Each structure stands twice: as C-alpha cells, then as structure tokens.
Length: 311
Ligand SMILES: Nc1ncnc2c1ncn2[C@@H]1O[C@H](COP(=O)(O)OP(=O)(O)OP(=O)(O)O)[C@@H](O)[C@H]1O
Ligand SMILES: [Mg+2]
Image (cartoon, rainbow, N blue to C red; front, side, top):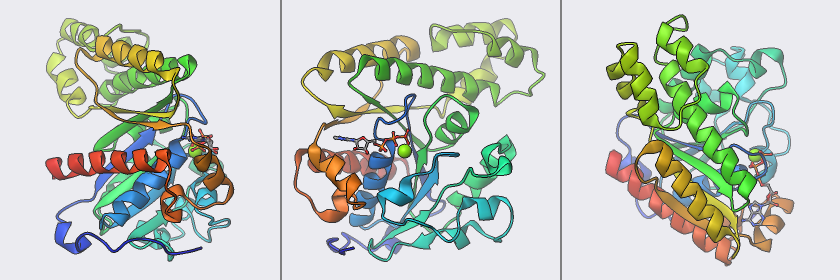
C-alpha cells in the first residue's frame, strides 16, 4: 500500500493537551457511508498533522478493517473487553502506511461483546480518551440500538450521516430524536419515574421533553443532560435530487431541536468512492483527485475548526 501522505502541518505533540477529543459518526440507516466517512476523516486529520486513532465501534458489524486493507487484525476491541490485554493501547496499532493514524479493530462476534453493559461502553470511551492522541474517530454501527446511541452520545463531536434519500432522512431524524431521549434517560436511574415516563413517550420536540421533566420536578436534570448533545449533519451520496431531502431534514431537525443544526458538508455521489472501497485503499490515502475527495477534505477542515475551538 503506498504511503502518499503529505508532511504534517505541525508536530502532533505541539497540539496535544489533556484528553483526546472523540468524534462519532453514526446514522439511522445502514449503508449510507459511515465507514467511508469515518475512515477518510481520520486520514484527513492525520494528514493535517494530528495524532488520530480510528476505532471501529460498529458492534456486530465491524468493517473498517476491510476499508483499510487490514483483512485479519490480530487483536481487536474484544481482547480489551474480555481482559486478554491490559490496556486499550495494546489493541490500537500503528497503520504503517498511514502516518499519524492508529486503528482499533471492532468486535461483536461473542455474546459478551455483542451485549456490552452501559458501564463497559463508558469505560471504553474513557480509556480511549486517555490514549496519547489528539483525536479519536469512532465508526458507530447503524440503527437505533443502545450501542449505537450510547457510543454516538459519548463523543464530543457527534456527526449524523444521511444520504439524500427520503427514507435515509427520516431514519436520521428518528436516530437523533431517540438519541436525545437516551441522553436524558441515561442521566437518571432506571427506576426513576421521569425516566420511566420518558421511555414510552414520543416527543415532538426537545421542549416537550423539558415540559414532561418539569411535571416530574426534574427539568434542571434534563437540561443538564442535553447540554452536551449538539449533533451535526453530513450528507453523503448527494446528487441533484438531494436538495429537497436536505431541506426537509434540516427543517425536521430544527423543529425538534428548536435551533439550527450545523451541516458540515455534502459529499457527492462519486464513482471514485466505490472504486476506493473495492481496492481497499481509502480515497484520501490514494491521493485521488475527485469531487468526493475535495468535499471530504473540506469536511475534515470544518471538523478541525470545531476541535480547535473547543480545546
Ligand atoms: N459518496 C459516495 N459515492 C459513491 N458511493 C459511495 C459514497 N459513499 C459510500 N458509497 C458506497 O456505499 C457503500 C457503503 O458505504 P459504507 O460501508 O461506508 O456504509 P456504512 O454506513 O458504513 O454501512 P454499514 O451500516 O453497513 O456499516 C460503499 O461501499 C461505497 O461503495
Ligand atoms: Mg460501516
């Protein structure tokens, strides 16, 4: 695999301070391009001089390794969860062809790893934050299961991906809404009356959640829980017909959140992406010049701005 990376813009060590910042990439629907986006984002940040760890947290359906051409990783996250290795650093190995990038392969082939407790998920994210790196990019699995919602929410920067298909738009809207509910219920004890009421409630907006919380006398707790929930959007496989879907998605989300949701980019449908997946060489590693690569770089730049403004 060729090493075509440009030199880093600055020394990674010079930027590192405190814990690594975590970025999650998720979607309601499968196959929208999460793995393509997470992998290329991690590469882009590494190419800009950051020290990055790409983590496959698509529990049960890990596929980042194939995107990278790492067909049979010798150790995975499962080795950390089942305590076969002491530290998560032991499964974060250097990708020799990609300077500045390390990789933690995913898991989910055993009942224990496919059904992690909330505490285990929290521990994984805490340990990842303590890795000596600037940024951790996590590829979260598809769907609205607790694993996907929790890993998405535990990140500092949360990116929801949809394509321009109407069904994908609705799926992402549902995902982000359920994530809001999970964010609040996770902050209360399982038996708490408010948490129980919220589990069977289908709110039309964040303000409805606050209203219910007020009825139970715990509005402050709900507001505090949702304070760190600032999802952003990325549209992928965009074509001319995606304009309406993009508008609808933003309107749906604005109605729910009561504020604008940042759109970090619109990556076009591009044959080069499909080609890169089939050659197991990420687009930005191959140095391919194409519209999708341009837009992925601009997404990386937008993310870097956010990482820097919050550090
Ligand atoms: N911008 C794009 N242009 C063309 N094809 C794309 C683009 N983005 C993704 N694809 C195609 O979509 C396929 C699915 O992408 P990817 O595996 O990243 O989706 P995913 O959301 O991670 O799927 P899963 O939910 O199954 O993990 C890729 O193999 C690629 O062929
Ligand atoms: Mg994937």
